[in-house]
Image (spheres, rainbow, N blue to C red):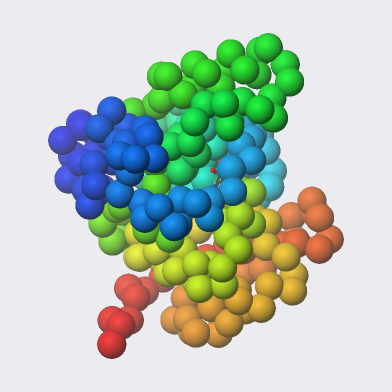
Length: 230
Ligand SMILES: C[S@@+](CC[C@H](N)C(=O)[O-])C[C@H]1O[C@@H](n2cnc3c(N)ncnc32)[C@H](O)[C@@H]1O
């Protein structure tokens, strides 16, 4: 698929190309209050972890044209691994972490190799990487075949209203036959249960992926267009 086709299908409100996506807080259109609330413990799990935790196979990814990785981590490791494995889908990574100063990001890293890898990834991001938050996804509705969130949202969202906002955004950008996979969700998350109750026309499956008995993997399948909001 050509770049022009990609932009057409997945046109963003703000540019979704990293080159023109802001890299510093002061240039970002994310409201300051919301950026201040972002927690940024930055990991870079490999595709192996994504497949295991999200109960996915390489074949599932190969069926997609567009995949969104929410809270990708600054290394955009999943997108890079997909490329390395020859998966043809366009993987768009979003993470607000890139907006924070490098020293914030590097402070948790201990090995030289990790630091070098993180620096390289910050300086040479994959081109489909956007500094954004899940509560405001800068993409058109019906853009993605699959939306993934691994150890990002809702884990790092503290406000209940922001959890429901980010789930609403996920449903909006999913294609009508698309699927979202989100892990982990703690079993007693009332706000998620409320959200599920309010969306009877969407299929929600709570799956035990065998990783943690207190959490589940949520698989959301959007089989119908969203009902218009009043
Ligand atoms: C623990 S890391 C997980 C990274 C990667 N998914 C992985 O599994 O290794 C959590 C990521 O979520 C991002 N994050 C925190 N709040 C977010 C939000 N509201 N929207 C999108 N990403 C967010 C952080 O910047 C951080 O990179």
